[in-house]
Length: 279
Image (cartoon, rainbow, N blue to C red; front, side, top):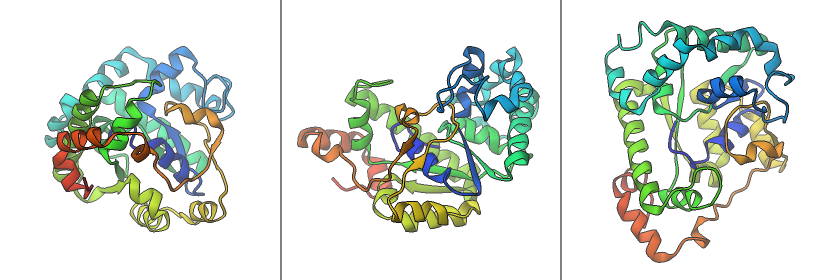
């Protein structure tokens, strides 16, 4: 859960290396992938993918009109506050049944915890509201200057500095609201910078929180081995790389001017203070 360009795809890829985790990618995009028979990260259309082709029947409810209508309501940013009412999503059976059937079947086949890297606060709360799941939410934050610099790139959805700051503030406000009122002890906040600079401690904390074995992840980092992307839907352009390396550097400080740094810092000041980001 968190703002785009905060490192969630990378974190999901690293976690996928655990023997206890199967990452499915950003499942809010699954209906579109099924409808268009888009390519899995392995390069094969979903219907021909070695992984996703095993779930053809289970995937069909995701492209129903009912699912689409309920998804728009349940995953909407505007609906986040409504999750304070426990009965908000009780009647949204198509959405909950489709997700429950897929996640349960994948878990039965793999024996693993299932990782959905969708990022949407609304989706996290929708899954959390379904009593069929034991949901643990990882809330990812990143220095807003790194987020703004990433959005400035002419890839996928780019944003201006001001637009990126507004977006950053809105998403993190919703995430903080969800964590403090609804999720409470069922979330773990992870700073992208801690992931890069203190990976061993960070992954040990995640492992303890999510009850997963992270030894394989730590071993790959220590031995500088690559991390396979796996079979995911959604995600950023790195998903087509096949595998990625863990790196301990963040490049934004060398790519953003001093004036722009101060401007971004001021525009996102509350979250900089909250998350201990220095000017």
